[in-house]
Amino acid sequence: GRPAERDPVAIKDVAVPVVVPVADSAVADSTDPTEEIDDFASLWQLHDDYREPCYLWEVFNIVQKIFLIGILAVDDFRPGSIGQLLTALMICVIYALVLSETRPYYEWHNMIFAVLISSCSICLFSWCIVHSYSLYAIRLGGSELGMYHVSEEVTSVALLFLTFAPTVALICIEALRVIADRHLVAAAGAEEAEEA
Image (cartoon, rainbow, N blue to C red; front, side):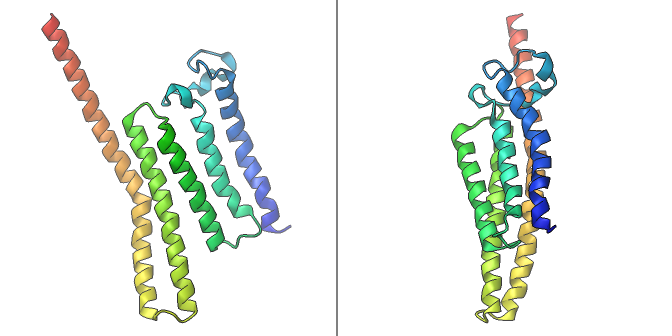
């Protein structure tokens, strides 16, 4: 058959083995996810980083990714079309709004990294929409060819930045976390020395 007919099967193959165990582990005992339950004991690390009301955040996170994959399988969207990009942008904006409202992570560095990734996704899809409109204007003869080359160069730089920014930020955030942890250990040691 056509590739579009095989895409939903591919999405199901991704969704079932990933979402089902995560959902099972989350629902097994949402009141106390640290309690050892034999069937799900190996999956409790999925809850370690989340605040108490947000045990199901991992499921929401995966659902967002599946929606982003799923729009590729919709027949109405041509690959790279404005409709596809707008739908992806809408999904990322909704995710960012829910993220900012719930603030699901215990640790500040995890929250900063999640916000950064979400912001990069929004910027990426927004830039692609702007770039698609500029290419459409060029096809209609509304812009000079020189502007197209500038747009291509700027687009390449923007995509490189959005690709590597999260990695650089992760390194910086982890370095700050290590420094903060060392300060906490040093402060705790100083307090113990004073008490002694």
